[in-house]
Length: 236
Image: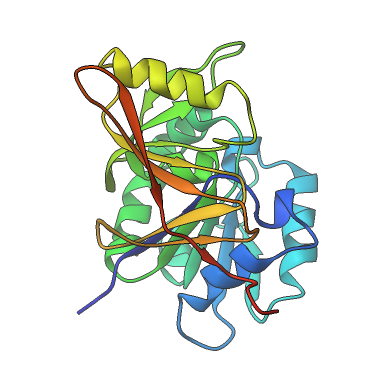
């Protein structure tokens, strides 16, 4: 039976920890094949050239076949066969709202769902993490945190950068307490949620202190449950 996998990183990876590729290496390992084909989608950054160069520089140190797909300067009109040929699709951070709008215009959202169903590992950081859930906490709107409907591959909500950006935790708590967002997960920089099908299978981290949490509102308070995390560099 085909295993559907998503690895959602609150922060970290090559763009935030260029000298620590533990999370990126973990993502590639989930493809369970030699030299997996990995495509980076930098849409949320406006396909920033520097972001793409950093991706190639980092993944040149990993045993894989790396590529990118720009929607501003696509190298092919055949987006579907190109993306479905990948073993891993890795989504970068940036503006979630703009990314999802562009994906829907190009039909990438539907292609990603098909890729996920066929066994391609989906992964990403920040915007590339919350996009897979029903809802996410985003700073896509200037000067404010807000709740955004996302793709809904995974149930519930997600808040990235939980320990890395001071406004994230209070905003998530505020939205939960007000009933504006459904229960879900908060993820520190350097931590990642690994889902198999639509169930959380494991939490992994690239640094010992990074954590993820299941977060929900009761009648009287917002409750965080710390999730056990596997530190990927333990013993190394």
